[in-house]
Picture 1 (cartoon, rainbow, N blue to C red):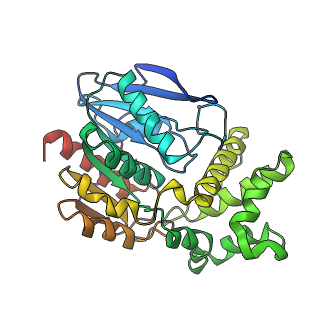
Picture 2 (picture 1 turned 30 degrees about the vertical axis):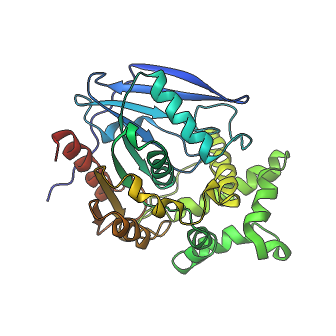
Length: 316
């Protein structure tokens, strides 16, 4: 079977910044066909932001592609800001952008933390959704958080040792709290070192077949800090969701079409949670990619996602 790849690169038709609360200004863009199927790309992290490659999951002739950098992420300002940054506010931001662009309903496409926010958004506003395409399911449970902080060492022991080893032995009883203290420290030497350790740990676990290490660029330090600060912030607040909220809320969206794509060897977000979501949502289609980990850029994951967006555009 031939694997699908991204659609060829395209440039945005329009970009802008959306005011959000007293602090934030959110970067957004739209591309593709303005008369096509509207789709909102909900990025992961939180804190990862969007990139030009994210447009490539959608046929630009058939989709009106909308990308948004969430609060504190990507090109949004202020960078890495945790104040006024909650799931409820991110949901409200999506609604404001939808209204700003004059879109009545859109397909919701999100992976990893983006799957979490996509589910929360859809359950809050099911009438605004055409359907969902989700990848790398994270249901924001305490169990999943503890797996990220401690369990991944079963597969990546040396990477975990480097992650934990960035914290003094006397503080390792609560790694999350220790990292939060350092990531919020105003001293760049302190927060940059913590951000690098946090993001390198996650990055090492992303793929089934790791990529060779590349030299660090200046913009990488900004990305690392945004990712680490916001992930730790959302971890520390239980993603601002109540226990089991996303599974309990499935009946609100069970009438919508949904495709779930998940790597069989996803260490960051174990596949059992994709099965849990599919069990709660019997009409959803679960695609388990047999030779992939977590990253949307792994060939099998990319292929399954492009196949899913094409199928939705075809009405299948």
